[in-house]
Length: 220
Length: 246
Image (tube, rainbow over all chains, first blue to last red; front, top):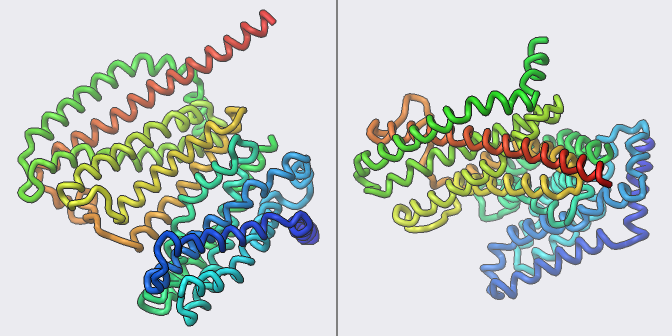
């Protein structure tokens, strides 16, 4: 537990001191979402109807930005070998890394999302549900992303490749995330929230396992 | 012995080359016969009362869709065998299955689109089954991209094998969520409780074509695996020759 915390704090410190990935993800998220009014036209009704979808798709894309650096730096300078040799299981190393990724590039989205959604004329009464759905869905994005990052470690054009691998796997999250937050849908969205929770509960043990297996192949 | 023994017996590439050399001509002949019979039956089948002549597209579309899923299942099984037992033939089988599966998936998408234009009045609809086949197509593409993304081919093969298993776990989830999202495609009508709802005049050509497609898949897979084994051998000989010269 101590080494898990140390690893997490190290990653966070690195992210803040180098300052880049997290801020970049939020700026990309806001900027890309604000391209939609130019593309779709400024009619409030149209924007309000599509706001949830725009926010979710952009959250998906923003979570990809920092992925190729998730293990790359540690792999290049050898720290990853030391982490693999440490008593902390590699699965927990992956979990710490994924948690760090989420804290840096997922959590800020929860703060930016209501602002972006409001600018897209989304009704304020729906905002808590949107944020709750993102809070439940974005950790799964980071976990799936960790698998993609581990698989493409050392590959040519890893940054592009990782999106090609991860995006199809994230479609269920997009479907249920949008449905959970959509005020036009019938019901209170509790079914969709439960499915989002179930996906997170599945990803939590399985993704670190798969990613650790991939890292072992890379370190062989 | 038992499972382990038999696994090792089949893991021998030299034995595979020997056995496949004998089996391949027979396999190819049976495939051609079934394919010819299937095509003839497809054109002899009466036109559908609603769909007219375009129902014949189904004789390619439905078997292609079955093979798309079947190939992904064999890809995942071969990948698991390659990861667990370091089975050299399973590794090659997985690698060579992917392009075949992607082709069947592409064929399914294209034939469905050609059928959809006269029947539904649109080339593409965001219906659940079509969308999940499209996602399957991207999973195949991702597998092949990852396979070729490394300078060290062994690393690419292992990473791709893990990806195949991750994808295999995800396919039912994707299928379920997409189905929940939207449904327009007709429900399953051959493999269902209470027997098929298709008229025998259409069902028979369909089943013959399904057998023909399966045989075609196996034949092409054996040919590809043989080619891959020979290619590896050449590469080893090349390396040895250049080593001896240098």
